[in-house]
Length: 561
Image (cartoon, rainbow, N blue to C red; front, side, top):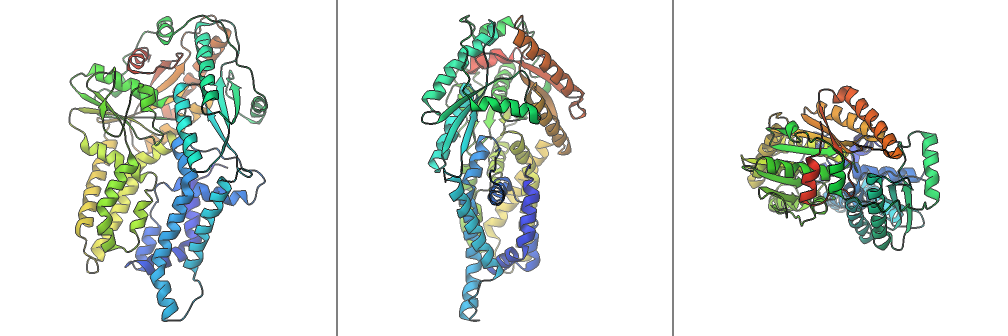
């Protein structure tokens, strides 16, 4: 099953609507109608919470549950979700406490109500799921990575976070390892780099864990038979071929491709806010960094900000330079380029602290809701801070999280505005009960910022979305779906960048077959109705992948329309 989190959450709300409404009504100054209004609002970041509860439910009915998680940043949030579930139970308990005391002391009724039973259920579910995740006899975690420096760095961060949270990672699987073959300049360079990266993996993230290497196939395994054949590679450890010793560097491969560089910034000309999105593992961060460097060189009179909103930041690894939450120059890049990995949780916490006292005055117990920093809302505050701080002469290139969560970020202004407008209406209605004070001013300011962000996102002159993909069936299918969703959101897509293309296959049989398959996928992408009218730019495969400002700049110059 493919979990539809909003629908699952709506079912959960409907099942417990009465008890939730009781808790809100008992613990706040809201009447029942207002409580129902809050329960009907969309909840940002619900994916991880509902996913966790669904996993716990399914675990009761199946012998084995295999979970395909979201990419790193949001997979880690899924694993940490029991803390958020327990926090929800604690907040509901605080809302119910005064009513419980009145019931016990004045009415002399001590038996639990529906709200009490729901609070106990939520807390128990959080504890049960947390125990399952951390029980190495019941739960196994397999970490999939690629034999590439960027993927290994992200994997190291992710595995370390899981270990700190008490989750055991049993196995590291290295996918798409190039098998043995005849001499080829590009293949030999890839094999040599992959052998080196496999050595790094053995000495680092795979130490004390089982390690498997899965060979790269000519075509992606799709369908039951192909997957069954592919799975046979998981029960053995294939040897990694040494290949020939022919020397080939990134610069040499680029030069040998014979590619005539296209104007890589044509699709974003005139834009001041550029989002780079796509499926996990297709090279979004590398493309975003290369594009930002090219833009900075092309427009030396404008400042360029390269920004990451992915919870699992990778900009520092791609740029081979330190990057933090404060925008700073990048070593080896043009002087007008700065980079920042936005600390969304920190931005949200600063806003929460500013509202802490006001929330105490307005709604008892609900300050705890903000302490949850619901996934998505924190990213929205990070984006709002960037849009608010933009200068008239600045270009912002945003490296987003993979597809699903990038869409959530782009949809977030609509959800946030709905929440702010409801809260303002409630404050106006109950102004005789509470003094709006600074909270109302903050909500009005937030509404204005969200409205500005919403307008910028849908301005075709200012904003473009570049979709990064690979020339393979599964990434292509996800790209087509993403293009449809962008169109439904009225977000202008500037171009599709097909990454890691085998442009000049030479005489290598494997490269020639791969190039033919990729050409067919690019043609299919061009025929897809969702992608028609959108420029397609092809970025060549190089080995090792470009890293650092100089290599990224050279690589971006080889992109072809």
